[in-house]
Length: 199
Image (cartoon, rainbow, N blue to C red; front, side, top):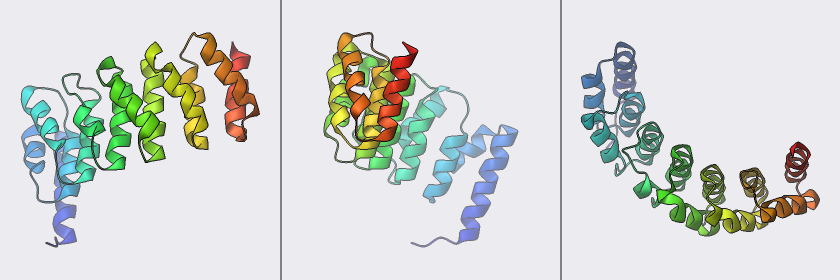
């Protein structure tokens, strides 16, 4: 079913005005819009973490539109009652990537094993990269070998892994960073040099 662009634009404007005025009821109503773009904007605009808002964001975890689920992942970051596990298991790579970022920002250990699985086996490298970064923020010793293994991945995943290793006070981490001094990617080598110089 096609929607008129003006209807979407008007709804987005209403969300923006409601957010500026703090009209939570209007924003909540827009989370039920037939337009995914409007629902996503409404989720992003929600402030506070009372039961109604938390439940609304949690419901958005299963929204049929990936953009809404991405918005919900970001919305979960300042709300500790929400757990992004379902989003980490999402079929959409952008949702998973954002959920990994959220899990790192929340920095709780509850999703660590799932993040480790994503970091080592997800088919999308952007998801692996985001999971590696999250594991570095969490800094659990159990994740160290997963992060070291990521040094064999694509260049941007390796860059993320080098930075993540800096969170570990472990000889294995330092040795892995030293090996990056001869990495074929210039940025990986530069990151390793900078980290070793700062020790």
